[in-house]
Image (cartoon, rainbow, N blue to C red; front, side, top):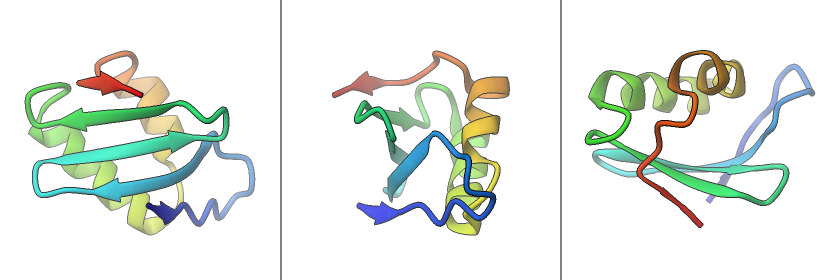
Length: 74
């Protein structure tokens, strides 16, 4: 997994891994979630990829837009 840059220093996201049609997010709590084109959808996953690589806004986007719509939790 790639460490999340966390440019503002207050994100709940610690790391991510980008797949072709998915993104896996690890939160500072240690919980890991997989988001796919199936759930929450392609548009949301692609936006999450952009935010992850940018290093800001990902946790806020998940809490405001994606919410509990994930494919799988580890």
